[in-house]
Amino acid sequence: MAIKSFKYQIPQISYLIKKKLWAQVLFALFLGLVLGVFLGPEVGIVEKETAEIITNWLSIPANLFLKIIQMIIIPLIFASIIRGITSSGSLEQLQKIGLGVSVYFVITTILALTIGILLVSVISPGNLIDSSLIRESFGIEDVEPVEKTEFNIHDIPQTIIGVIPGNPLASFMSGEMLSIIVFALIVGVSMISISKQSSQPILDLLESVQKLTLKVVSWAMRLAPFAAFGLIAGITSKIGLSAMTVLGAYMLTVVIGLFAMILIYIIIIKFFTNRPLLSTLTMMKDAQLLAFSTSSSAAVMPLSIKTAEEKMNVKPKVSQFVIPLGATINMDGTAIYQIIAVFFLAQLFNIDLGFTTILLITLTALAASIGAPSAPGTGIVILSTILVAAGIPPVAVILLLGVDRILDMTRTMVNVTGDLTACLFFDKRIKLDKPSEEQ
Image 1 (cartoon, rainbow, N blue to C red):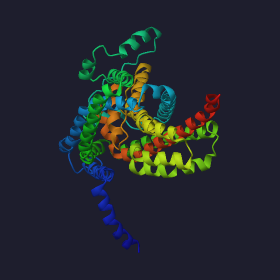
Image 2: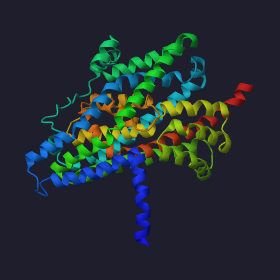
Image 3: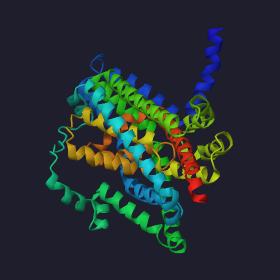
Image 4: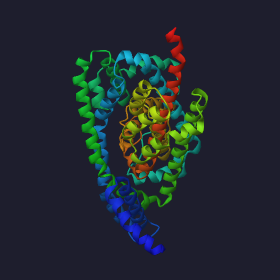
């Protein structure tokens, strides 16, 4: 019976690998591990020089993948942040409820980033392996250390002034991501301050830019299985199977952080909404499962609105504003994943991050998670933005490709849970404000 069951499962597994990108990446990861062990010194069949030549050729898809991602990072971030801000509709609407919702989302995102920093600092998954072996496997002789600048109150005024780009075009050309993000925030706020007739052509253009860049991302993701195969084969041939132990510790750190954020939502529901906890969490189940399976907050949006209005009895004017805005700018799960990934890679490459750099990474992660498109697979693209700010080799992002799909599913579930929790929070707030309005 067991043999028959296994024979029945083989066609299903084969179909899954053919149709699903994440399955292809996992399968490529497995093949890369096998080839890496075969090429490594543990087996000793292939000479070291020959193994290096083979892995150098196999790394071509990984380098192509990286170049494509780097090519579209800036237009994707710029267009996404502006469209995220303008999704509130108008300045008047933003002032009435949007300002409160936006502040709430920023606070929960800061909590998410704090959770991520604390966890990755305590667990230190990137310190489980010799960083010199990692640098060698990536072909990097010496990673330029990030200057560990001590906090100095006299530097604050100049730092604040330096964030505003004097020449946005120069920032675009040099890839100064924080300046680009600040410029996008300023443009986004100004666009909701002018008439829709004046801003609509630019919004249409930015929508086209975002769709175009996401299409390029989808093309790049076709290289992901080959990139993962070549990269893991190269790493395993040099450092053995301990690479998987490090990735396992990284995944565990992210998952713990995501469930810690779920605990924050539970506290909000329990103490700020006066809702029965178990029944409320049960109402979210369908939306959470769909988010887990699709890895897209946008795809779950109709079901999230339906769940909020029909099961949770949230006012439509709250749910139909909070959930679409949340699907665009409320990315707590993404923020946790990004900050842990950056610190993990910094530990892996033995890069000492000073206070100023950590502050810069946090601000970049906050803005980047707000502007992250709610589509599967874009987390890796956004992560590359933060790596630039941290001084970490962007090629390291490919190391995380093999496990990204599983984490993407989990963090999307957290994002959707956060949107529904925000609906309950503001639905309660509007009820409290209503009597004073009638008076």
